[in-house]
Length: 333
Ligand code: P6P
Image (cartoon, rainbow, N blue to C red; front, side, top):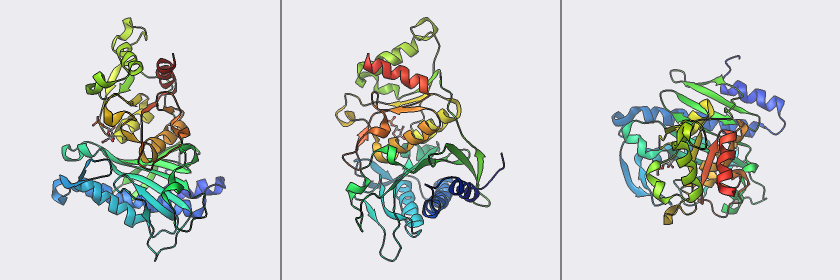
């Protein structure tokens, strides 16, 4: 594999795929450079005054960390000028974000969770940025929220950046999943993994076990069967991981297999799930499917969910194809 840069990769993708135009390449490149700046701020930690709470709440009623808002601003300011975006939507802002009048508007809608895993910021555990790109289908000069409410199978690009021991950009443009490693001294994204494929089977699940008393029966039964090990109905011993940063858990899964589960449960605030459909479940679902895995809400394909609200939540079960199929069988039997 020739170690090409993100720019060379995007040019190759554009030359080999008519659906990929200059504007999409410009959007991805400006977003990737914004994430270089986020990576720098993340690594500053206490030296950069970025730790701790901002003292405000987002639309979800969650306390916003300083780095949530810093990252949000970096992405907005880092992409609004590129001429490819019609409007944006962020986990951190209730309303859609228009493009200021001085910039050319393009036809792409950018949705993002600027910093996922905020509870891990102050304890130096991997966090990430998640992004999704749709095309504006209407002829609205100024996009409206309704323009964003498209099913995940309409995405033209999606991916994430994980700020961990390495800073990695993982992206799909609908033709496979590719990973780039940031060379921070030169701010260069270098292609280091191509056509990533998730192992179809696994013996590793990721779920927050402290919520067990709230789970519906299918999830409870599946986890109990996993814990029964080689003497139980699944006839193998399972391992468990839970990082509480979806980006880090998903990256482990596309690297070595596994399943990630944040199901809807009996808590009033989680009856529809905890994770957000438009800028967490949909982009991760696109990446997972492009890498040969499956992504459901327990019963239905995530990418086929028809969104009703910008910040709506969904249950998420995603990862190794055969294990997600097994978990689905617990929900449909
Ligand atoms: P819990 C982070 O806040 C997040 O949105 C995901 O990244 C993560 O998987 C999940 O929530 C963790 O939730 O309830 O275990 O803290």
